[in-house]
Image (cartoon, rainbow, N blue to C red; front, top):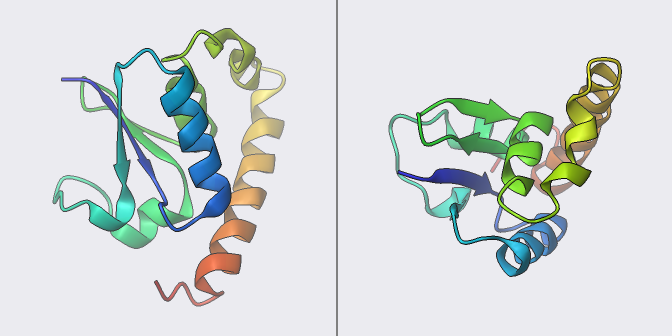
Length: 115
């Protein structure tokens, strides 16, 4: 089993990132559009849309910055993203990501979360 990144295929910014990951990736990361997933072991579609999720090969589910950093580890540029998990910087990176993710979700799906 391989790591799987769940992304929002209706988000232009997300798709640019996925295109970059596909181009630069080492072929060991599966990419799955949230809008086509049917897996009862995952959180709800709405929950998946609110934050980036990555399921590790061991079934551990990573969310937000941790999912992003883990996804980029499947490229030659993974080390460039690891600073987001440094102990003194992680709280700020998590806060910034949560704010951005909320803004993105509301922009695409409305404040009420209608998807």
